[in-house]
Length: 194
Length: 186
Image (cartoon, rainbow over all chains, first blue to last red; front, side):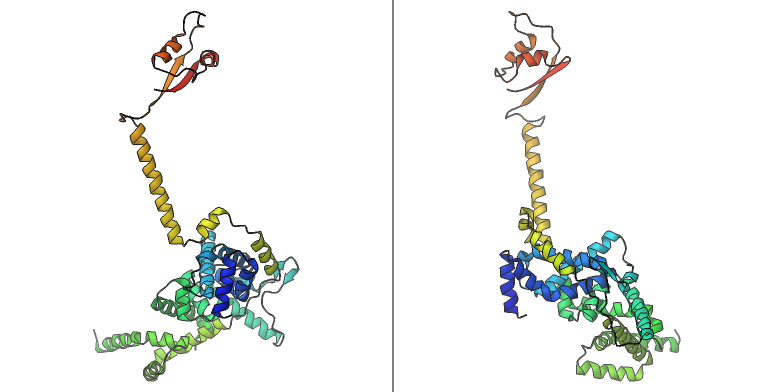
């Protein structure tokens, strides 16, 4: 979506056009969910938080100045929502086991991860175990470090975009990323050492 | 400090200088010059070379985590909530403000309330010398008044300049068994 298209949709959304707002957020819905699920470590909470983030963005669309990109603005809201949720829970080390479980929805149980039918079951089981370990290691990070590493590695954002989304100086983004990786290296020593 | 310790400290300091470059190398953002400088250091420093290798593996692990997909119910649920969301006047007022602006507005509102409170106390407080005063008159249960003589409280109220009609006389005398209270202005 070009910046001109975004600007037009933002203008229409500000005027109360819900369809325009939906078109604005549609490209980010899946990615926001993925980010929030990894941030809070709970897939069904992530569905609620994704809705909360989008609804908050809808209410605050008037405050979107256009200085930041719509994407970074949306991620700033989502990060605040995730940090608030973690604070409410009173825990920063989140449970992670449910991420690999199917999700209970109105249509029954649905898998949360896109299934890979090409791989051997044993290999899949080993991969699932490894993913669980990595998720646990991520969950052991403080929300500040967690957000930076997820935005960079999983969301593919640049230093500059992360700085804008989290309202941080560029140097802080880089040092947090380095510190996050150093801690993950310690936690994941059996998998990365040697 | 022995010469061995000194060499180790010197090496650590030197390695610390390469932290920024190691971070950039792992993130894939190092430029050609930085990469060349780091490569020279890594050729001579096994510890840093190992660190780079392990950090790169960490990055691969986090980057390769599978994408989690939301349930199919998310989109319709969100669409319904978006349409149901009718911004209240508070949302309209504060939704367009940034958190700092909201805090500023709240601070100004608090100061205004305090200023009004101080003003009210100054005007009506014990030390006030001007402006309308409010008094509460306690009227004890009196004996029933004779039709001719004015009731004691009525005399008192008249003496105080109470505007007739602001106090229901019958209610003042008979409305309660114990105490009647009347508020008046003078």
